[in-house]
Image (tube, rainbow, N blue to C red; front, side, top):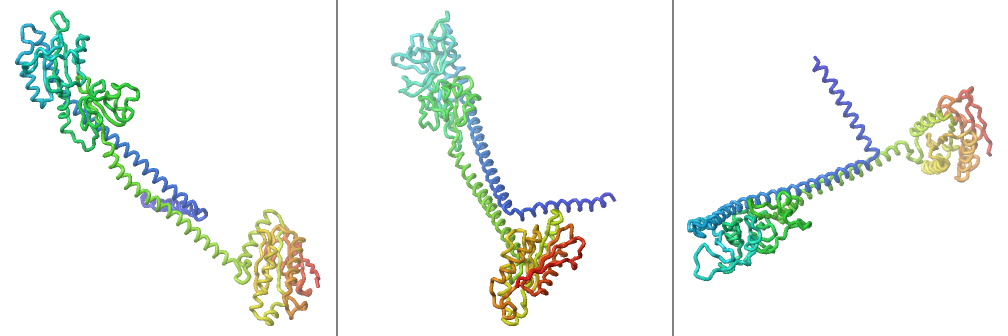
Length: 528
């Protein structure tokens, strides 16, 4: 029972909501431009929304590219770090054996381990040797017949010589003197004498041209470059190299080094602030893997997406704007047509004055205004004298021309927006004069009569020989009479008095409270 009784209430509520919504939409008929403005605003909102969506998509693609670059850098750094860890273990064993006075400077079993390391790293490990304290290679990996090679001028030798606590050191790239100038980099550790003085350096040399093998299996479809850089900014390896050849100083994208702090620019996560690349430190050493995503590949895909979505959004927006303003034009056309129909419905087709329907509506409206303002309402009743005889003599076509001429003359005296001239019927006309006292109404009645007379339209059936009119005028105040219709009847009675008095004259009256409409006192003015 409760459910069934609730259904009618729900229907009523929905109906009320729909009615209220329809009433709101009806306001668009009064302000059709609102539809165009709203449609244009929605279209612009669509364009703004799509622009924001495309911008967010571009940001997301940039973030994805940087995440991908970071992932690749981490993989390469981890792979490189595992090799470096192996080489460092070999270095420590070389140092331990060199510092042991009971073993050879570079025992054969350690050499075998280094050779095995060469095999594992695809010849990335190029050479290994012991340098004595004078800077000469005292124990090479493979025996040579030539004289000892001096490396005393190398930065790694001088660095260990000057700094006993240096630890693992990565040299600057150099041209190998034992391998025909092959560009190499050295991993080194200091060898100490029993009294902890400098006794030499253990060296593992890495070929830079083989360092790129660490990046051989990386998919480069969405990457611009991968570089291995030591902490001072020297490029150790790159793929593809372009301007950053091995041995040159690194050129990081964007303004990553604008603060001249290269270590901060290279270090991750501090380097994550860079918008164009990602860098990850190789575990255990002062080397970095720098990966730059391919903005060209990234942006080309985004541009295709943006163009397609932009064209769809622009088409929808243009269609919405055009449709909105076409609807505005249609509403305005409809309103104009409706206004014309309304105008035709309240306009007399022959004279162009208001018709009887418009007159009745005007009388009701102005009477309400007169009651609120307690002001006068005057009405003129105009009739063409002997018009039936005119039609019989000259014909109805000429009679219609006379009606139009008289109507134009009468309408020319209604100069205020509130005044109205209407065709009452046949050859009778009425003039409504709101807020007009009796004296002003009588003066206008006389002007109408006189101006029609001055038209000098021939009328042999008239005593004057020309077309003339008789005018009845009545003035009433809301407190003195009952309605506008009473004022209209009084004006009609005054017209009758004017005709009975000889025509071509004006008769006026003012309605008083004690007087009935049929008893209003009129005064006909003889103008003959």
